[in-house]
Image 1 (tube, rainbow, N blue to C red):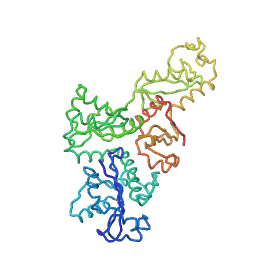
Image 2: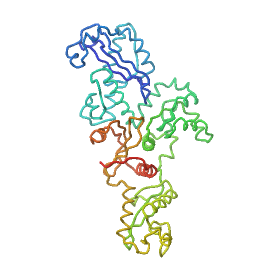
Image 3: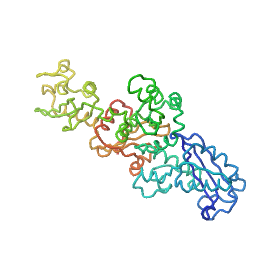
Image 4: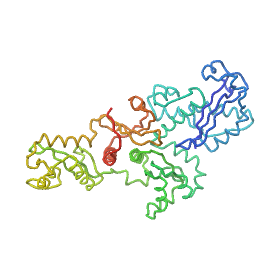
Length: 453
């Protein structure tokens, strides 16, 4: 659990500042579960430059509660939480100073979004909250007020969590909370999980990730892990002490994150999924008569595939479907071996490319349309799918036929501006597995929107 906060102060000498406004959002890693926002009477003068910056003046604070009146609420909302702030060293110091004045100790673990952004969102011109949120297309209201800046930090932290492919933030969080986690049993773990689409992470008693999976219903899938009786499940049941998850909304995003994070984290129970997830591919060649032939064959590193399949049967099913959709020839797609015409020509469902009755130009045009639709070679495009909530969409970015990464956005200007799009995208490795995942998902989900850019 995280307490994401922002504090406005009076300014002045070091350790003599007073709080004028505080906003705290309790965040469970997925959504805000509690909120505290208040002006604070600092019982001291506000520096003029601070008044100009924040708009908060002494008259506004005369009837505001003093710090000792809100101290209990701050303790309650931040209890068992990691404090997250933009320049956390400053906000945490101010809080501890105020509690020290009351004669109380205040100690929490902290995370700084400046430092995290420098690690996970490199090459930004500036890491100030204002400039960083503009670069990422994060909408901010009430800039330099605690509520506006705290909410902007929530949105920034969500982006940071999604970019943390090594899951170091999650692992550190689980490890810090390990005593509590050790008391959990399987039932309490399952009860705490949602029935949503996403990626889940199974941790051992050291907080290390020992298994990564994806599901359209995380709660149901974890329940299966804990009730199955095969040898792998029994080993997991003995070792798992905690389960965390990342919501994705889109199954495509979940598949891509699962593949990438297994390769990066190498959990010991994911050995099978470290290998490629496909065995066959669709290839094309031009025969002696000038016709483009299609064939499904075992994957070869020496040949350029149009698209890939999990197995031979999946490839044959694809060919059977597109045969009708594009009015193709059974013989030229490898479905009917013959030296003469194919069977479909006999029943007048083929235009006769198999016996040169249809011109190569006409036939090849339809084949080329199929190839273009099922391959994203040299394309600049984005794939838009469901987001994690109603106001959000997910995006997969393809540049020059190369898979660049994934992200989430709320406003159209975030994807219409290439610089902003590239900033919100979590960079991913382009490989044969990702190509297979994307192409097979698009084949199965016709409703998914694609845009050329």
